[in-house]
Length: 117
Length: 147
Image (cartoon, rainbow over all chains, first blue to last red; front, side, top):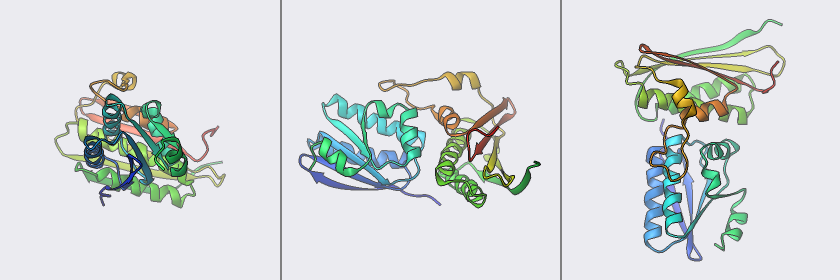
């Protein structure tokens, strides 16, 4: 029944792209946070989360994503999201996440804008 | 034209982690059978997830269960609707406080967005709450202008 979240990391030009697959709930959000904080501890200051294989999120998972954004902003870095379903995009806007992180339609556009190529 | 109930489903679910996925999938299957579009189904799914999480996390109910009822109707006009009732036997809550609660980036407490998400994703939301429990009734239409 559960859709355990999986995260794959690809390092790119001083930054990284995190590919998520599955449900971003409290457990999934913590998994993303753990990977993101490891990368930040390693000096990464540009993170792109590609959610192309995530179709369901909940407000607890998004609140953890907001915490990641805050930590990245505190360290002078930036976070972007790409490949969101329309409903996830709308949910991000409701919770204000879209005001503090860049959202791109495609990974190509995100990589270009965030200098991750 | 008189609407005809075409699909009904009742579920009693334990309040365990991720049970909201089972509830959402059941409602989504019903909505798809009525011809509801995937984006509308996805919106309803996310609202149901938040309602179930609210019941599980905040109701404080003694029986550890939530009770769900889905009714899908279609009058053959290309505008199917799905009614969803989610009930818990918990302690109830202050709807006006929950409805006006707003968090922003930098706030110490970032949770509590469930009701805002539900109301944004559904077309009609009605909440009945008391010391004996809470029922949230939500309606999703294929077309928002359903006069």
